[in-house]
Amino acid sequence: MDRNIFKLLGQKFTIKLLESLAELPKRYSQLSDICSNDRTLSLKLRELEKNKLIETALSKDGKKSFIVYKLTEKGIEIMERVD
Image (cartoon, rainbow, N blue to C red; front, side):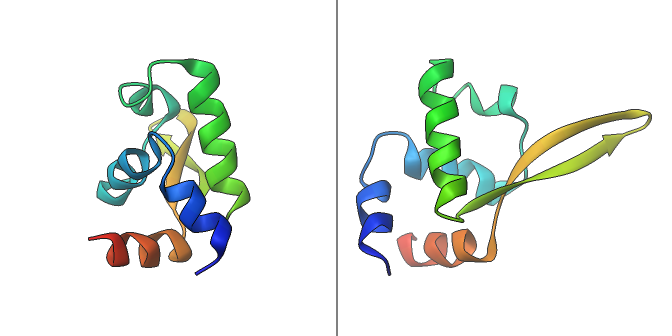
């Protein structure tokens, strides 16, 4: 595993966000329960995406479309090791 990944996993909110996304993809507003500060949440999600642990996907609910965050294969692998 990359050294940056270990560093990232040790940061506040990272494991909780990944655990939440391991259950099922979630919208930004659903993840704000984990990290109530919008700036911190945005930065953390960007960092996870940059390290290819999560990705965004388009989801539809009837006529509405919205963006969800979900684990990548790399993110799933990391979470299996963390458990």
